[in-house]
Image (cartoon, rainbow, N blue to C red; front, side, top):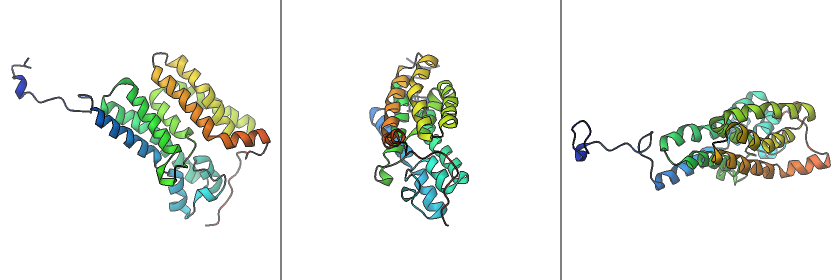
Length: 227
């Protein structure tokens, strides 16, 4: 076949990725690793080290998440850290997924890889954050309506009980239901939401024990660190 009279052998082949021909299996694997490494960027750790010269794993709750950044360093650090963590989940899904033009499951897998990178970051001995903000970024790109429903639930739980961990667990537990209701034609997104809800529960296992024992830290004004 020829296009507009141009013989097949003289036609320019479709470009791999960028919405052209799908990236091959090796390319997909490379992109999954890239998504994992993007997610693994230890935002909270870098904020502590570069901003105040401290290791957040030795302060506050000792967790590398935006909540602990707020407790130790304040809003001026926590907000940028939270936004970057959100972006770490959204970027692979919104940019790498369409560029690869891979199978339907692949874009979802990129988001999952980013969340796994955040929770199990090789840069901080595989002890990263708890995955909530990065998962939210992933689903901002995949299921924005479900995320929009979840945010008031998270906020209401935090307001009623005062625990970020309880708010995150409640929002994560209900999130697959909102995905099922708002995106019934997206089975990969649904099953990813189930898997990540379980991962978030697992990453909060110490918080769950403290909640049951009545020793969990409430969300309140930050604890200062001497510069």
